[in-house]
Image (cartoon, rainbow, N blue to C red; front, side, top):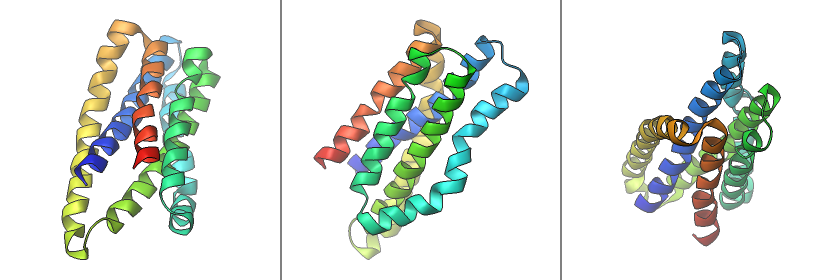
Length: 173
């Protein structure tokens, strides 16, 4: 479970860190406060609409394909701001990252409930919660350092490349 938790922490760090990168990138592009709010809100839009469906898909076909698809979608979406500058690129990136994370996160929770014996379930979810906390702490902090040293577009690309770790892990696990 600890290896799964580590990989989940990476995915959460990418998700939360990329929100910071997108918000600061939007400000750098001269976006208004409303536009920045919309970019950050797009992370949750499709998650809100499709999370239940993502969970049903994970229940029906298993967790491997939705987790892999989510990781790949997040990684590819984070390449968009590197390739195309502008607010539309940020809107598209945020929307697709949110969609990918809906599949990743619901499948990870499904997997956590299935791992091990039933008496280990509470401990497994505690471990998952800790990995979420680690990702929530490290992702935005790393975003600040990445932006400072490489810039917004390169930081987005860096986060996109970091999602290769969860994607490969899902393929090999």
